[in-house]
Image (cartoon, rainbow, N blue to C red; front, side, top):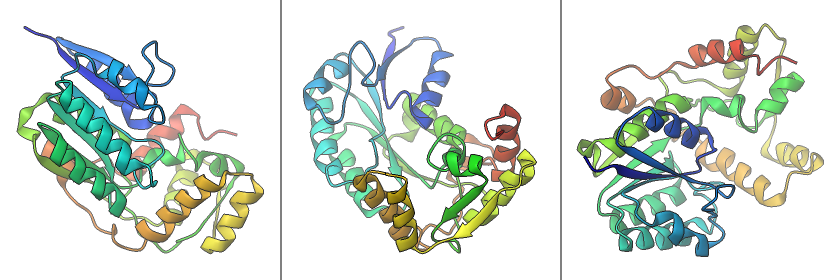
Length: 275
């Protein structure tokens, strides 16, 4: 049997790493890691690196850094997907942002340029609290965020990786768009309460205005482009448009999505939230 060659972009990221772990357990799969640190380097900001990683590839998992919402994403996705199809790629699976208008433009580009495609549109990750920008505030014991009232169906990166892996391997997912959410709507304060309970720590939540949050980020010397992206996500995406639960994870995987409380209990056992 001919091996299937799969390129995983963002192979060190929250979902990319997990997809690689799943594919490594399977036979007849050759994995190419898409990262700036690999021998065959891949960099979204250096289009000259794209062709080498795409040579001989059958399927691609596309994650875009830092987010499909940034202005350069549309051109990058347009050029990358056009090149991938030209070089013989048969399937593209795109990780998109649920409720992001700019991300939806990129989805349409993939649908137009790819021979076969699956769109995986996910809400905010559980792992943002343990592997990303909310970890340091959790460790500090005080999490201060805007949109304190917003309800979000936080989604687990393991569930996302399972859906992506299924889409890469099974053609029944071709030309499908899946909207991934967790099974529970939570505010950020409720999420922090779950983490505090699971970790046995006293963690305080403080609601801020967007202006106060931006000022705080500048005090921590966060780059302006990152502040702009974070503000966009809080101001636009957390306006209530995503305050609903979709059963696509169960539809694809035949099981329930992981609940945030289960994520919190599992993650607390790793010690990542220990001070």
